[in-house]
Image (cartoon, rainbow, N blue to C red; front, side, top):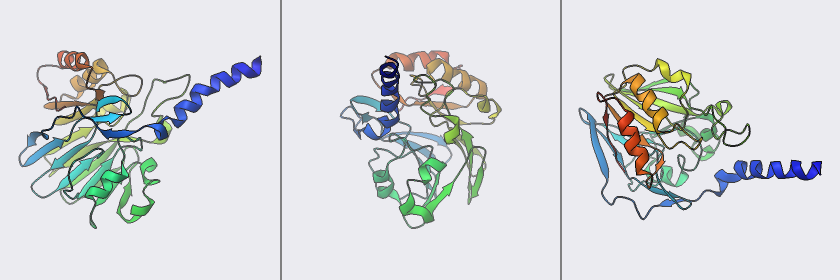
Length: 263
């Protein structure tokens, strides 16, 4: 009897560990046919191609393009519909809704720099010459762009002690400082964590709100937004059918921050 109970306990753990390899990513038929864009500063536009399909769920991902007058930057490019070449590709971690070799192949050029977490770098052997690994709290300076790696991890477990994004993996978010006068925070996949409390002078925040012990939920996400007080916040990483999550998030965010929905 003891052996049977032990075996049954390990079944969900095995499924959880294997789940990332079983995830199928495709373009959602519910994707907005119009490229979604917003101006976030002088000569700087943020774009998203929008909804992807994660297995059977229609999901707004954490994938964006930043375009300045002389730079093209992709963050977690997945399901993008462009071949516009990248100066920089930033990747927070290796889960398939954030990391896609197919999409990297579309936009990489000989000069492209791939800035990523250590887990991603292990899957980019073919692009070793392009890769720069960042660990939490690292800072890189390139041309007119500074990149700071911010810790991104779960404090809540999805099953027993198992976390989807454990701190030990050293997954990251990014603060991107463009031309020294525009700071953009992409949180990656994370819960509300103590390291966020020191963030200052953020103009644009890209924040996950989906919950389910994978990221912050809408209330937790609004809490960190109200602490760091960005000018604009863009919610990400949620199922598009859950419109009530968006409405609740907007209602929790202080009126001094503008909420921009791009799905």
